[in-house]
Amino acid sequence: MPKKILIVDDEPAIVKGLSFSLKQDGYEIDAAYDGEEAIERFNANPYDLVILDVMLPKLNGLGVLQRIREQSNVPVIMLTAKGEDMDKILGLDYGADDYITKPFNILELKARIKAVFRRLTDSGNNNNSEQLIQVKNMEINLSNRSVMIDGKEVNLTAKEFDLLQLFASNPGKVYSRESLLEIVWKYDYLGDLRTVDVHIRRLREKIEKNPSQPEFIFTKWGVGYYFADK
Figure 1 (cartoon, rainbow, N blue to C red):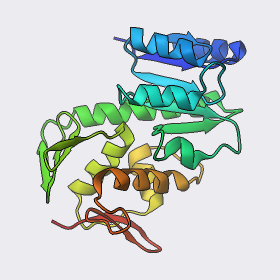
Figure 2 (cartoon, rainbow, N blue to C red):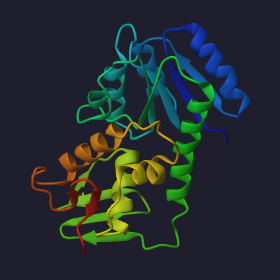
Figure 3 (cartoon, rainbow, N blue to C red):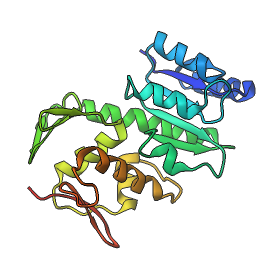
């Protein structure tokens, strides 16, 4: 079945152009032109990906993202104007999986969409590997992509889980921010290393009792990040 994408943008020309181009690649496309319509469509239909503009009438993109995250971990790519506070968009209060600034190259956006779907496919084909990783009071289930700490489920976005799975599968190995971009995001992220830092900070907020004194994800200053050695 074709992947179904919801495009949310109040500029008809952008929606029309994106829809045409993505349909050429075999995607099924739905569209909404304001935040309230986006929520209505999301609640009424299953989507594999959401492309979501930040600046929307009625309910802005961050409000839409928060509503989506209350019920789903579907991947979300944000469309933003230059100068937006990406720490806020990718960070603790929202949890977008990716973003691209306007004006953007449609080929770059397509590459990011393919990277998202490739990550999900790769994780779904992980059947031959160990399905449970137990570290201290944390249990990571690779088959259903869930995380339990002290018996309580921790709600992670797709990208946060990808990071945690990589770290926990390779305890003690130090990853630079550049290597994390290459492995987890799977494309050249145009040198914006803040994306990694924001996702690590968000992940720590969810899994660490005290993020400033982590038990799981550590920083090797000047080099990168690594996971507690079992």
